[in-house]
Length: 535
Image 1 (tube, helix red, strand yellow):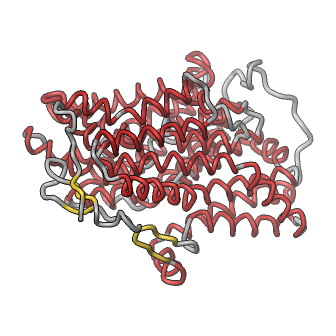
Image 2: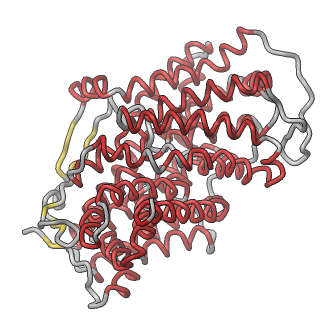
């Protein structure tokens, strides 16, 4: 018999919302303040989520366990599969000694560390967000930055900060498509509205990113390049999202940003070159040959091509037809009812686990790694040893991601997320601001703008109509506000710590990025307020 979610089990919205937030307090508090290793913090967060859902919100224990198992399986596949294979590719490139060549070749474009950061984390990372999403851009950017000599904290935190503005259009528009599905709004109208919010932040993020790395003065020294990167990304993102749709808004903008920034840096360079700590440029090395440069960059070019191909809807459907296995989760599928006022009418929550092993992004990355190994001339023994060493290296990261996704799924199926969302909906005239913050909270909880849109998209439109606001604006605000939560979601932090070989320091990464995440989310909330009442 289906179980109906209860959103006010304690008889008052405030204590019910605080009870619902208990897993967040436990998880993030354990990371940031108790400084526990990530897998222990995640397991404590999972225990708190199950206790709150079962004892506080009345969720049947069996369904809570099924939701946790569903989340853990999703954490391992597809997310863990992506992490494993990105680190495998990095290990192959590193083992062949190619990062020195990559660093030297980058210095042909610019020897300035601030601008190398901008090119890799912002422009290059945006391409992977647009093509694949699901943690791929953070893993790739952080791995390249650590190979270039950035500190683990800088590589991790800065990759997370950079991966914001592209998130709403990530994975070929998946978050916007999902939002249209749950709200009934037109997908192109949603794309256009998000495309009137995020491009402003696409202009801001390059400045913010370099400010976080080099300070205000260091940022001012390279402002022309920051403006070039932002403009060549923001303008195409606006035009494509408003006049075409969400599918290529990031990919097209990222390609133009990479080309535009690289071209600009051939014509302009800052007066003072910057490296970590000293503010002085490294000594020049003997330039590598074209063949060396080609072999060093080939793995990442192959990765770009394969990941983009894997994300093309036609190819993805064909691969799914060959391999996809869909399984209803026993004891959960259709047995939890989401009820008003979160939805217009009571509806069962589906729980279908898709084992699309061939079309999964991680499988594309694994294929790219094997192709790259062949191009680099790796022996079979070297490849096998690198993969096994990578599996050993990421074992705790996989456990952590599985546990963290289990927290998110228990929160979702137990109704805890809706209880927190309804608390935001009580803010009345300030709701446009807090609606954007609700999207931020949703991504911080689930690790995905798509998941946040599925969870809160309907609630946003229902609340907007009750308050006389534009439902289209508030649905878009959920997605746009959510992108700022991407840098503090526990899943992304673990991806970054794994890519930089800094597992166990997730609390330091969280403390590094938390202010940036909250401040940018607040600015997005203010923009939505202006759109609602002024613009």
